[in-house]
Amino acid sequence: MKVVSLDDVLGTEHEVDGGNWISRRLIMKKDKMGYSINDTIIKAGTETHIWYQNHLESVYCIEGEGEVITLSDHKIWTIKANQLYALDQHDEHLLRAKTDMRMICVFNPPLSGLEIHDENGVYPIDDHE
Ligand code: 9YT
Image 1 (cartoon, protein in one colour):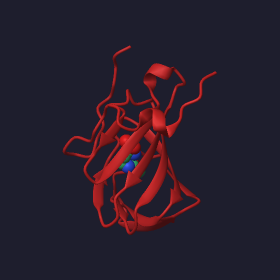
Image 2 (tube, rainbow, N blue to C red):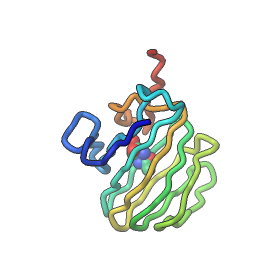
Image 3 (tube, rainbow, N blue to C red):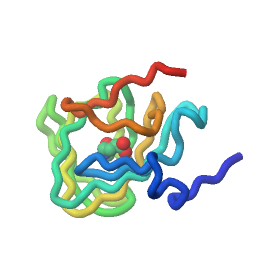
């Protein structure tokens, strides 16, 4: 068993600054759990284009509020604390934070821990063992 504290990650290469967000990577591919977990702050007033073509992601909002716009149908989903959204269709979307939002993000397959989005809002597939 292992225990990971947010403090273990802060100030390391696994605290990743994505511009509109800061992602603290708690569980990564190297932990061999089959998924990864981030504690992510989405900055108030930002809009981020995201399209995880290579990953499935569930996002549990534990603080703050904002909205997700799914681009295939232009639907607006209001998201606030204690709600989870699951990108079960690799949904291309915009994430708008009204306030700072604190999100617990679970990725399958797991992130290596260093990823930032490319210009299309995508994380590359990590096929290294
Ligand atoms: C909620 C979301 O997808 N935010 C973008 C950052 C990403 N989830 C991450 O790496 O923590």
